[in-house]
Each structure stands twice: as structure tokens, then as C-alpha cells.
Length: 279
Image (tube, rainbow, N blue to C red; front, side):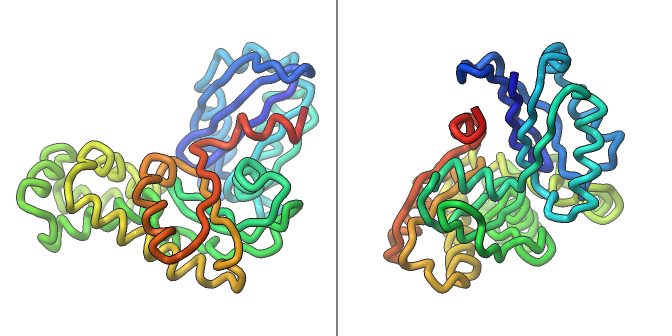
């Protein structure tokens, strides 16, 4: 059997298939970003799904796409964790950008972006990633990602830019206290994931004009700052992968069309789209 996975900092989606392309099971576990987690944490995150581990001895091949694996040392960390658990499997690790590209553009050229907990983009020529720009993380980039929107929500809250009703809802739902925000941001690990934890507020209060305007602002910034840095961005379809892009695709498509660009495919999770590449 073959295990295909798409791993981020927040969670990992797994799909187990047999040689006839039949899906045996779909599973979810914790994040597997080797630049964020140590080996023990990644092992525990995988072990959170005991049902999947019941198949471990039957898995002969693993194709895992993950964030943070461009660094060879980080890639080796993740490979060690996987080989300790799935000791009978041949393990192949690829970047999450390649997963997004294969799942959306397929074998055609395009600009491919990930808008999830973080964000990233690349020019894909139909076979491989030729150029990638937005890979500098949440401090410098990550525009229109979950952690970017979370940061804007916090800023608007503390700068009193939210409508009164929205501010009260935000305060009530997250029990906002300045000292706790400071502790979680500057003293605890994974501040990017902490910031992204506020993004679900946008889905819950989606009808609010404030939320709509925030979405437009984020998507416009992503296109005008990041995608416009690719010389051929006006000539290629724009494909997207990730929860932010999928959930708020209406606003994303409106912004794409506003700038006269070509919308491509939008998928929430690339795993099922990757069966054709590996089975």
C-alpha cells in the first residue's frame, strides 16, 4: 500500500491507497514542519492517529509533501521520524509547493500559491518549480495567510479599528488580554500558528463588512506585492491551494478579476489530486 500526505505546521492530511488506486483510508494528524518541530514532537503528532498506524507494517511507499523541507538537514529530520515509524516503507519527501502545483496546474505552466496557516508562491513550468519568491516566513511575508489575517485582527482590535460590535465579539470569543497575547507571541513556540488561530473568526462572522474588507485587503496585497514580482504573472493562470484560499474563494476570485488576471484551480487539500502521480 502507498501512503500520500500533505503536511503543514498545523496539521497533516494522509491518504492510504492500494495499487489499484482504491482509497483505503483518509486520516489526519498533527503538523510535521521540521523547521518548527523537533523529532519527538513530530513523532507524537503522527502517533495521534492510531487508526493509521494500524496499517504501518503494510505500507511499502510514502510520498509526503511538507513545508520546511527545502533545507537538507530539516528534510533528514523528517525522514528519520517517518522511517522509525514506517520501517518497511520507501520514503520520498517533497515540498508542499510541489504538492500544490501538481494538484492544481497538473502538467501545465502556472503561478501556484498556498494560502493556509502561512503563504507561499511559485512559478511552475508543468514539470517542476522554476522560481519561488514568498518563502521568508511570517515575519517578512506570509501575506493573506491565516497568520497574516490573525495579526491584522489583533492589530485592528488593539488600535480600535474594529466596529464596536465586532470588537466585542472578538473579545468575548478569544478572551483577549494584552498580557496573554504578548506571552503567546513572544515567549511561547509557534507564534505563526498562534496568530493563525484567530483566522476562524473571519469565517464565523463572514457577513460582516469589516471582514469582507479585510479579506479584500489581504488578497490585494498578496497579488500586488508577491504575485506581481513574477514577470509573467499576467500571462499565466493563478492557482491556489489551502484553507484560506478555499473558504474565501469568492473574495479571492473577485480580486483576481479586478486586476484583469486569469483565475485557475482552487483546492483546499491536494492529497486526492496526487494519486495519479504516485499510483
